[in-house]
Image 1 (cartoon, rainbow, N blue to C red):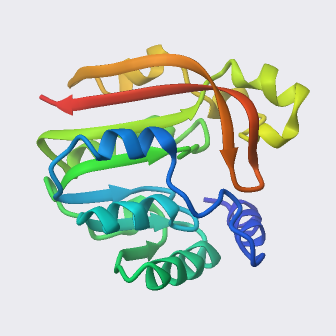
Image 2: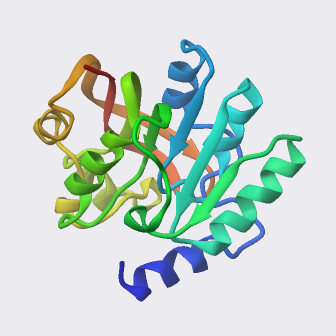
Length: 207
């Protein structure tokens, strides 16, 4: 991961305000509340809003991000909510997760560069147990049309960092699809996800 990318996220998370708010993502909340609690991993977790929510439900929570500033705010948010989360700073290939460690993995706006995004999904698959659940929401390739009209909707401006249904099917080919769709939604998440956007939502069970 290049240093300018790390610097960008450290800068975004360095303000007192939470960039994407302190409340969990709506789709994540809906999906987690259907599941029995267990061990869950949050890649690219930023300031911790989703990880803290899961911990409040009773999940054993692990998270990682490239931003040390994100971790600092996530741990403060966890403390304010009287929960604990295991939060590491680094890139996935350098972290010490083990095969089959997790019952669920939640990818919420985990946008990676085009050259690594599929590889990250396939590496994460190793850390999910058989019959484990992936919960995914991120901007679709159609979102560029929304972002061009309203920058506050957020999201990457590089189309290759955005997602299509076909990409998700390919990356998670060994999953039973519980839900997979493209959807227009109204975003109201902190400072940087505001307004109408286009997302891919996916819930799958590992075969």
